Length: 203
Image (cartoon, rainbow, N blue to C red; front, side, top):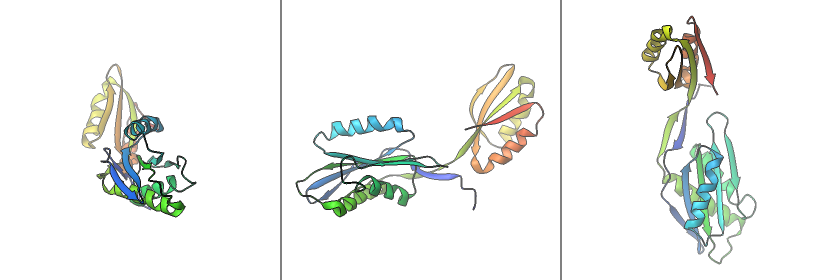
């Protein structure tokens, strides 16, 4: 298997989409999502926008190497909302994303099959409405060295076109660089072979 070092995600929230089924309205939203802490403010915002809605069902996936996901039915029958939403996240192959589907009940019960289909369709429309972009999976290294070795370090950073994330330049210096995952071993070996320079990976 090749060393895959890109992933698909979105970099901005989608426009609201509306899917109607037997008088019920399903509003779909997609958000870029990096951490669970972002969930409550997003849901609270949607509750203000839709004060009469009964269900705020969602699924998200975070991570590029080991993926972490969660699906929530928010009071709908078990697995009729969250999992169909998550299924579409998987179909589109995206991560670091949250999809919320808000349902306004229209007076006609849809049954579990109808709900699964409606949540799936609302999610699919939301994802089709997004700009899906490809990002690289980067590895960050901390380089520790004395000021006198500065030129050596900077030369490699320049030659290998590495991104500097942060730097502290004093008598003892620290630079944090990032590189694409597929180049990470090579970069590690280059710095590791240098005298008086310490390198460690930042997880």
